Length: 409
Image 1 (spheres, rainbow, N blue to C red):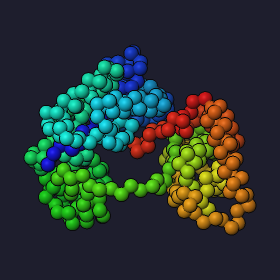
Image 2 (cartoon, rainbow, N blue to C red):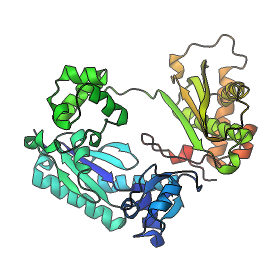
Image 3 (cartoon, rainbow, N blue to C red):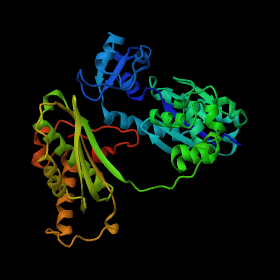
Image 4 (spheres, one colour):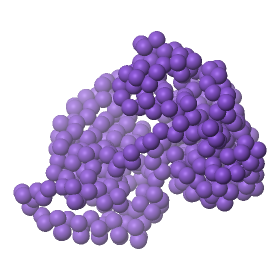
């Protein structure tokens, strides 16, 4: 079995970009925050901060206790996306990027002479050298293995700035020192589920047969794990996008009913514009509000498939009429569209009062004006008190399109 995959994982990516751009942050413990507030948590930490035990999800207050000298900076998603594309270009100048997996991870398919271990290592060194030549504070760990899954495992074995090879002849023993949670796809809940099937080590996981893993996972993903552990690249059917949405941790001044309403309107309008950029319609909308010291509040409803902002605002307003009267502080909100489909997949609504063509022209005009003259050139009034809130965010599986999602004016 050949070496087929080279996995590039950028180390402490958001924090590294900040250190690259701001010399005063270099060699210092840095925590990156979604919003500058004492009640939030780190979404990234530099390696200097990680040395104190600070990681993604560490509360600001806890981070200060662990490292009094930590420097907090507010995240700048557009900058991270710009650097992401520059880094792809650098790797592409060395070898083809087969797939971009997240803002800070990509995999390259090794072919021909690249599959020879010495050549694969030379290629990894070339990628590192080219990145370092342009960005001396952005580093990556590289994993090389028979498939993407094992290459990712290898990339995590030596951080930061490492390069690790897992050869086929080393399997499975090379994996036995790892914990189950070291394997991509096994989180806290999956670990607990495997434990119920008497699987608590990687050695036991590897010893299980395909049927046992499919039972443990409750489906085909268990069979894929069986293959991935053996260096086989599993086959995935590419599905169309099934949902999209936006969420936001509220700044202190918006942690009230009026703030919830305004930010939800802002999130909905952003999501509508993004949905239209994919030429999709939503057939379900849901909202969620997280409360402090109280269960979250939320509602969802099926709707006639639409990408029309006004229709979706009507749905949002119908939800907000049921917003609970409570003294509990809201601290995060989210809007999600699901049941996404193309226009060809929908049946025409016989009771629609406004012709689809007119709706489409209105929304296209709004989107075009905002593209040309800057975001918030035209917006619906419900979002007026939150125009500076809910800036662009980067999710693990979604790299924002700057032309559509940037907040730049």
